[in-house]
Image (cartoon, rainbow, N blue to C red; front, side, top):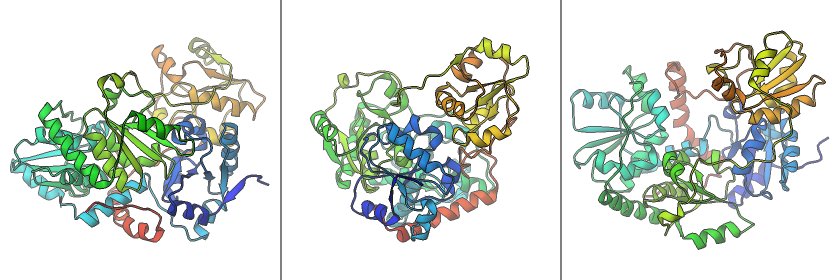
Length: 528
């Protein structure tokens, strides 16, 4: 019997309506999470809890409520959170079924708050859009038109509108004047589905750019459903802007942020927020990852602004927390903040920064607990062991990475499902665990050793070290010990989705506003 406190659906709902800080954490893998979850649930799988939770729920006395759908994961997660120093942990009363029974609304897919908000924006603002056939006709006629793709560059490269330029969402207001210098040029913003094209288009309209602007209706999905051809591997990107362009964009962005009620802070104000032990304060640098790596404010995290608005729940997993945004141009932070404010966040832009404040170089490093002690072996030792039977290799990387390349004969596994994994494995004299870097494998090794008397080892440096050593590799779904539930297959990703799935996704998006109304906790407000 569980000794943990519980919180009910009604407790969570009351806290959301009161704008109290809370973290409602679904500890299942991403695919089951995406099938059914509350609007403001954050997905932090039990498998990766230690690697993600410190960054996503930074304050140790945050009111955390964990749940699953009867798999027995929530109790394990609660124990693990207590061991990590979290002091206010409870289980959701009745789990997901309890939420449903109490009348709670459940949502499909991922990053639902942002997607539902995008639909609300289009409904309230009547964001202009053009059908795929209309855009194709403009391109065929060589009309004065520019297509700007508001997704991440890697998504753009996978599939994009022919001739489109990669301009991730937060960059649009900063870059558009030089990509479409003639105010008569028709600007079209696209993404894969709907949300980022709606938000990107409305960003340009809110900022008052002189050009006519429209979203590509239903994005690359709409393009595909219209029977039109997408390009693959394009690499058209924005370039640096002039000082006058940046200054004009900063003025426009500041006006939008002020209208949205964005708070202004300088370094002293940020320090005061961070010193308040009763509140959670996230600090995000919304510039490009390349700019962040060259130099950033100490303690900030790189989260490009377009993705932050699209995936807020994935980085700011405490609903009701405060968010501070940083840039060096006065455009990207203000535009991103204007959207977060409309999404119901208390958000500030950090003003008054000088070049010297961006004093830390390198990539962001996630805060993590002390690594468990394990027995490591090197690549040569593993290669020798694999020449004879008896060594079973377990790979805990993402299933997509495993399918792309893995150590020959390695079995793909999910850490939280080790009892099921063991049932599928051959008899072993020893287990060797790996992942990309062996970081997650270290935590999995402790769990596995508790389940078996067989010796457990970790590959030093992980599969990356194996690859660097020039060892043989295998690809494909060669040895899946459990189903690939670690990632939800998004109907708008990739190039091989069934038409029915794409149309179904669009139909689902169209229904989100009605779901928001039934749920009643969102707190969104759209600028008029």
